[in-house]
Amino acid sequence: MPISRRKQVAARALSGQNVLTRPAPTEPARYGRSRIVGDFVILDWLTAYGTIGLAHSLTAGNSSARWLAEAVYGQFWDHMHDVYTSLVIPQAAINLGLAPELKAIDLHPGCRSSDPYEVRWRQLADVLGDRAPWFHPALRDRDTICAWQPGDPPAIVPASHVELSAQPLLELAADEPDGSPAGAACLWLARYLRHSDAEYAQRDIDQIRSAAADSKSDCAYVHIAAIPAPLLRPAEEPPDEMVLRAGWLQIVERRDVLAAAAARVVQAWDGGKAWPVGQIAEFDPASCTAAAEWTARLRPSPAVQPPTVLERQLLGHITSVDSAELLHDDTSGCAAVLRTDQMGEATVYASVPQRIGTLALLAEVILSGNTVWVRTSDGGLWLAPSLPGRGLSWGYSGGGPDALAVLLDRLLDDITGQPVAGYDTPPRVC
Image (cartoon, rainbow, N blue to C red; front, top):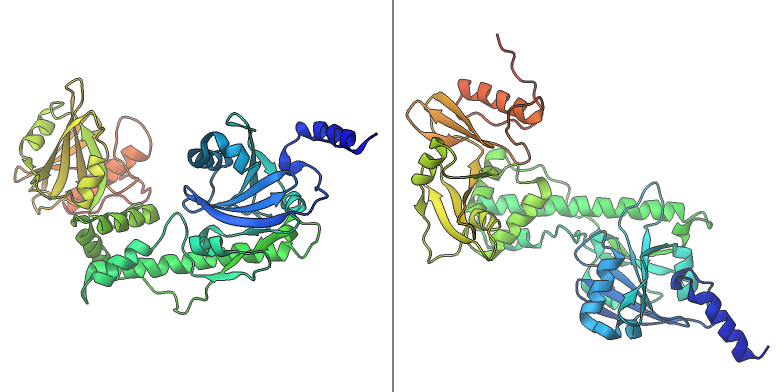
């Protein structure tokens, strides 16, 4: 059979097979270049099957092959298949010394693509002609990945997870005066995250290297392209709780974008446990007498200044077709937003404090819709305090009613008592 005929037969035999699961091509591949596409850094290999792009996400530890293909389409449109034959992206999850999962997707003319499929590191190495580099999610420095070349030793990278960068914390702390609670809180959390990320990355790398001692393991085909920089400071104990609370309070009252960025890091880290507010209440201002009374005492916030960090969070519930009025409750110090939708329906979104700001005794509890109101002996009306992720409810047997029962028991003893943090047993009724 002529050579050209044999190539045609071979091509037809491979046409129904995913690119990266095909037998290794006889022609050697060569590394091409790096490029940034959307939130990904893609490293290109020129192979006999076309250009293979190995990507690392700069925003997610586990990003899907489909998201990667959509980013490539967004940059190259109808020509995406001319730029890449196949895309592959490693996942973060590692279990018991297994190699990180590899997800791939092939690109075809007409903006078509294959279904995502799994590839082994050995299969990828066969196509690329060498072990492919892997950057841990805590070590994905954009410039380091872009500068990578085959044969490079592992880069030494200060640990910073792509999903939880400490950079806003460090920038905010750098501008704070000595003794600032906000500066102390941000600097401690930044150092804590650095330690956690470095230990997390080193543990995963050690597992891969240990498993790679077995040449039959897929880990033997993973090239560790970055390792964490040494930790030069010992781990520190957190500041006193009062310092942390004072620091976060300073931040949530600020109106600048850096404070908002730092707040997103804190809430992604622990859900805002030390935040001055817990939940966000949502209710119809006309749903009951308490809701109407509380809404009536709100005053408009000045419209000539940017929203605070807490106000930004409330405004996140507003769509472009809604009308919204930003309000403030002087009694509790909390913000609220009155939203009116296209149908004229009004809804109040209010930040709920973690403490009641009075020394008056508990006089009444009002249950309305999904909202718990507290009346004190001085006539004050308050949203029942709560903690992030620990809602109050009633009418069934479960965590919400238990949390409400424990809270009310505490408020009877101390109106400034802390809401339930765990799953305490409700008090017995005598």
